[in-house]
Image (spheres, rainbow, N blue to C red):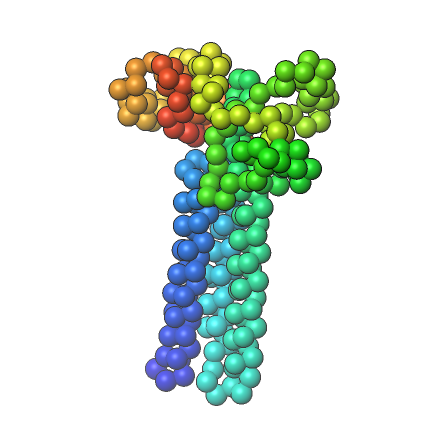
Length: 252
């Protein structure tokens, strides 16, 4: 095999390894911070991530394999174009992950809503200015509770607006409160595990196996978690109202 072919393949392999390194860093940020656990599946982020992998880990090294030739005077230009395209794809992917990242898990009456960064308008954040929720978390979603205002007219306006298809209280951070202050409401709203088992009868073995990990907490219930791609469940400790885990099972 000629030196030319060895250089071509070595360059492609090196390019692939470097691409894997940078995509690995992206994966740590995306799946470790912004979209933890089953929140990633519920949000549908994996489709975008796989597209990024296809461009940066597959297409980039493949183009290197095709164009790499030390005898070509325009080799530096060709490689620069490939790297710029990869960098653009990486930046665009990170931007997409960032603006669509879940920032709040909002307990709202009888469910938990996954609220993403691009669900919250600047006007909504401005109304919360001076409070604890006037800016969006960067290091992963925060569990909070949404509480209707004491003003009856305003509360009615919010409820009727949501029914009519407008914004609901989960995208109004001025009405967010610490979840710990509403844990007993979460307990009251929780649904039974027997209901969960009926809904997920086809996956009963796996469900029971996962639930066994939390037997020490005694009484358990669940709340539906409403997300963009798939609805999941939040497992609730019915004694203290704490959220023990998020699980990828159908809530309805």
